[in-house]
Each structure stands twice: as C-alpha cells, then as structure tokens.
Image (spheres, rainbow, N blue to C red):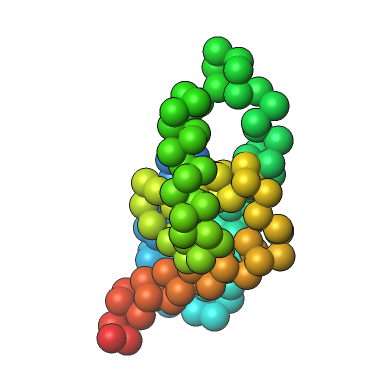
Length: 142
C-alpha cells in the first residue's frame, strides 16, 4: 500500500512545477515485480493528472496577480504563451507529458479558461500513454 501512496505522491508532485521524477519511482516498482502493472499505471496516471489539474486551477486564478512583483512571468512571456496556446488550441495538451514545457502548458490552459472536462481527457491520454510506454520499455514489452 505504501508503494502506491509513494507513487501517487511522486506523480502528483512531478506534474506541478516542483521538480520530481515519478518515472524513476514507477520503473523501480515495475522492476520489483510485486505490484500489479495495471494498478501501478492507473495510480501514476491519476496522480499525474491530478497534479496537472492543480496547475490548471493555479492558472485559472493566477491572472489577477499578474501585476505583482512576485508573478512568475513577465507580460511578454505571458502573451507569448497565450499566443502559442491559442494557435495550437486544446490539442496542444497532448504534449503535456513533455519535459520542461508540459507543466507550464497546463497552467496556460487554466489561464485561458480551457474547460476542465476536455482538459482532463486530453491530459489523461497524454500522461497515461507516457506511463504505458515507460512500462513497456522497462518490462521489455517493445
């Protein structure tokens, strides 16, 4: 049970802007062979998607503070991110699994008021596929 909780927590934190490697945790648990692969994939995916929803919520309410000194992006950076998201639209959320750009992308989706249901569906597809590919590589399914 503690393995699943640890995996969930690492996947959740990894999806936020905080540094964490849920892939390493998942790989170690897969290699240990003591847990159901399907349950591990589900736990990692749910945790990672929930972390992305946290980013979405932060983005949703962050704009009211854009003039504060501590705001993490300049007006120019914010405009560039919004233009990029508007150009590619919600389908860009399929890239939410990517390192470096994936997590900020989920924040921008919240900033631009992407509806929650399509957000969750696309992010779940992206992040679930990433974990499935990782499991396939680790367990030599490929």
